[in-house]
Image 1 (tube, rainbow over the protein chains, first blue to last red):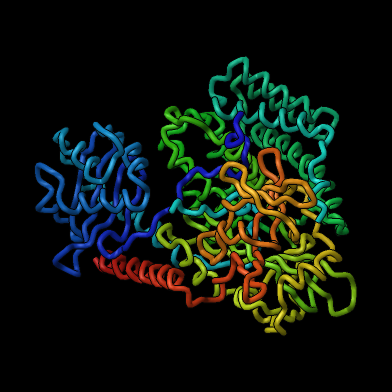
Image 2 (image 1 turned 180 degrees about the horizontal axis):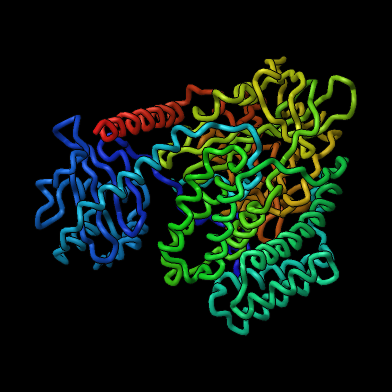
Length: 167
Length: 462
């Protein structure tokens, strides 16, 4: 086995990169989907719940009032594009492409090439009922803001050293 | 520190690690349909603990697992065997470390009486970990991994379950990011088996107990701050020398503060989550001591910090503490179940070295002997950089051991320039800073939490 394979502190996840949350407050790769919550560009009151399924690229986008997004008919809407952009910012293009099972024709994947490769397959419109699941994942994410700090030691954190981002 | 004493071979170490590796390869393929190679790996683990009290349950577990019929108790027995082997490796390494530091070690803490923990969620965790062992790292898929989400959500709010919850959360995030397992180019076999075994043992009643065994009254002299983080949790540990007011011997202690976090709060932004809960962070980053009165402390030397039991003390230069006081302080002993090479983090002071490079890695040459420097463990959330380490002349660090060798993780370095000695600390921003990049990161974290709350409000109103 290599040194990396025999290391207790081998780095597996690249460090998250900073991104602004105003446009896309929540994005994640989970439940077999790229999914998240996207702010409306025009209405401060409105947020969209958007998702793209891995493999089929079936997409869905609806408002917080459960109305289907007008832009998500026949092709990806701007919210889904924003979701892809921010997923690439946060997780890196390689991980997003691998999760969605997107093959990018030439060279390194990017938000643009991942979006284009998925669009080129004329993906089907997904079920907007997925919004409820995405929303509950968002609530789970928010729960992290409310958890109490502790001064009891967590010895297992020794396995999680910080990772310096590659500059 | 006598770094030259760290190079010697340890009898039996390679054998113990070979048995660990054999078991780790078993988990790579999984135990749903075990092959002869896996049966051999399991037998190797069982042989390694023959003649110990674990012999019989582990032999039975290895047999059942090799037949593809292991239950949860069998998996727990295998995790225990692996943990015992690494515990022995830990002890052998610590004997060498004690020779190198020349410091006394405190008596071993006894086994811990347990705190009451809800049994059902622990059983759910054990069941998920058993599923993982069956699918193996090669068989990972999003369905197996997502089975952990509800368990983790249920555990995180309960302080008695925080250790296991935070471990499972970080582990599951790595597994999720690595799906599907069949497509992985390489697998962190030692690491994932470590995390799996630890989690398995923490699901057993009493394993996570770290009882308070006394109180500390006296002066606390900080050495440095170690930061640990995964996407949804962060912990800062202050390593310090404690000088009891009653004149008894100096001892090394730690003070920890941790908090779960959203994965968008990163870099220097994490300090604001920790800072309000431990005044010691500010004191340590300002180079001050603190006076403790009746601070609860465990047998392992972990202070269970509460600001009510501490007040700001006189300035105390960590480098003076490291030079003068550290050599006479006693190291804390590690609780039996926590003994593992990855747990080794021993404060050391190194000076008078030459800095060289081995490929990209920084190496100190101390008294003619090389000592690897783990610059990868320096957090981005602080002013210390690998470049500063490379021009330094003295270093406060944590001695660690991983993948077969010792290294020192710098907590602070001293460089001598035209203006005299200048110190840079990894935890320099813990108490706050005016550094432009750090202020920007802190503001970004503040924005992130307020945006999340506001957007959630829009959704929740409906």
